[in-house]
Image (cartoon, rainbow, N blue to C red; front, side, top):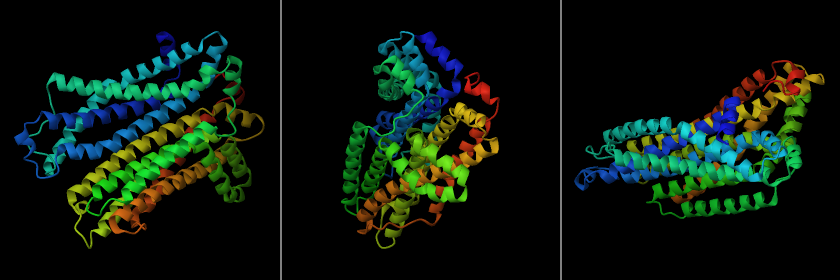
Length: 459
């Protein structure tokens, strides 16, 4: 089983690049905040009390809570899509007598090997980031000068084991769910299903989306009912609520993406009749593929929009009342948190879009065989990229709007938040990641002999 997993990873390294990067970020993030907690715990009480601010434990907890959840979200999304890309290979293994248990074991071995491959670099990056962040917090007075990242073997081993173990546990859980469908259906049906797509989102998935949506609504209600003096707690609840709502978007993604793509496709079909019609048909016909591309864009737009609007709202509300969010150190902390979250979302966006487009080589080759030219395919991909960006930004904006309204209610008593002047860069940033990622990968995917690609001669 190990040799088979290694063979697949060597043959298609690009397919495992996304999960590897996601797991690297998750391990680095867990190591970063784990070492900060260890630094606070191992420091003498007199040293900890020397900090003028809220203390390292409070800062690291507020900072790391959302960051770790987002890191796990990115891991789950990347692994789920990578396993869908292996659907055909796993189906072929089933047709040559591989049992469902062996298929699931192969997937688990791949996940373990990928995790172990990035464990060392992820830990090293997290340790370096912990030292850098601690030094910056000490410079700004948010951590006691005498606190140090532990250098003893036992704390380092404990933090490393927890970081790798937590990332591996989440990865194994995600891979188990993703491999469940292919391992339970008959081999012939699995092979047929690998080249088709479900036309509708299943009832269990929709029920799960509704349940998660209700949970997000409860978190936003909690944020909205916080008193004005608990701005930080309201902000954390609103940000956590936005992440839960984004999970609901991911669950209901195929349905929501298909509906929005259909509504937004009309002007594209008018501006580019041929390419626009084909792009609309592709997006709505392959709703799961569209959802895979849209969810990271929604994550990017939703989290960054929520953070920007919350910061702007808090700063405006502070014009009439003193608030901790107006301090330079708190603003810096929010900006650092935003930068980290945007980094996660950007990596997830690029990984997913490149993988989604690269796996369509045979589809593009078939279109070329029936008469489509490369320029026509690139125009089709341009229309798809524009629609994907628009759908993702709209879903993210809806989440950010709901979270920001809850936070604004807690801060100012009004559900109308203050919109930042620079908010337009969120859509621009999403487009800057989505359009070049799709077109660059598509340009490479349409190269080569079409007949050879259709026959599977190249991958």
